[in-house]
Amino acid sequence: MIIEPRMRGFICLTSHPKGCEQNVKNQIKYVKSKGHIEGAKKVLVIGASTGFGLASRITSAFGSDAATIGIFFEKPPVEGRPGSPGWYNSAAFENEAHKAGLYAKSINGDAFSNEVKRQTLDLIKADLGQIDLIIYSLASPVRVHPVTGVLHRSVLKPIGTTYTNKTVDFHTGIVSEISIEPCQGDDIANTVAVMGGEDWAMWIDALKAENLLAKGATTVAYSYIGPSLTEAVYRKGTIGRAKDHLEATAFAITDSLKSIEGKAFVSVNKALVTQASSAIPVIPLYISLLYKIMKAEGIHEGCIEQIQRLYQDRLFTGKPIPTDDKGRIRIDDWEMRDDVQEKIATLWKQATTESLPEIGDLEGYRKDFLNLFGFEFEGVDYRADAEEMVSVSSIV
Ligand code: NAD
Ligand code: NA
Image (cartoon, rainbow, N blue to C red):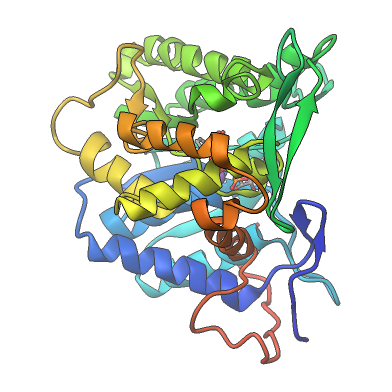
């Protein structure tokens, strides 16, 4: 079967197994090129199949020779329909890890559920004993609460007033004005329930209760801040409330881990093209300007460069982990540099359908988006029959 990108709105319905494998191999190669990191050896990654979580798993395995357990929610391929990119990424990761002699197993299911937590605890008990690093990198639009059974849906909306700004449709390149109505009713509470810190704390409580955390265990969750341009819809919007909650949860978890000298951190990461971020209005325009400027300055990073730097320059230096005045690790430091943000603010005013191809990196955006699904990688023959990827026994 020849697999081509099939777009519907902001999503791509197909994904390419060979391209996803190439993506994973490229990330492994990058991590290896940066040398050994004296990091954690037994690592649990929740949200391990794409984006920052996949990069974290790869950095632990191929930077520190760690044994990894990955949790994710992906679709395996079935007759006539390709699997989701995260499934192919994980299959490729496990194959590469096993070839390198590294322990790697995965659980494909709902991380918010008691069942998947139970399965994970049992797997750790059976295979690894204790964990010393837990990366929490879930991005989900929904969560079924494991205690109440309520289905919460997160929304990406401003709070209080309508937000109006420019945006771009990165498929057509058309820049237009968009208005987003403020949230209503339980939107904030629902968004906090899905993307806040409650589930993170539940994971850590469950691991601690069964003595599965090593002394000095560290856990890290990912957050975002961004510029004032996107504040109303991001950091001061519904999703921002969830991130506030996530960040506050880090302190609560650290308190709960006193007896084992464990610590919880939030790392604030850079804006990048992911399935989630391309669905937020305004953000694609911001990212296309950001990419252009950061590439010109030689400071552009993707997920793997971000996470490799997080590990090497922040988490595992042998010194105390540097944080900002709110206790957060900042790996968005280059994105937030004054000179970078000042340039974006100027270009933002100039951005039109006509000027954007010149002043922004629409092409880079589009390529990164297609890369998420395994398309447009060098070294992959997309005209060849895409090999059926069979099930991988270490993914249950
Ligand atoms: P992503 O969509 O690439 O990854 C999400 C992961 O969560 C996948 O592995 C997916 O399988 C998993 N997942 C989703 N629902 C699940 C469920 N119910 N059970 C098990 N697994 C589930 O997202 P990402 O962009 O890498 O985001 C990860 C974190 O990083 C999020 O907290 C996000 O807010 C944060 N972040 C993202 C950006 C950005 O620009 N993309 C920037 C800074 C921080
Ligand atoms: Na992730």
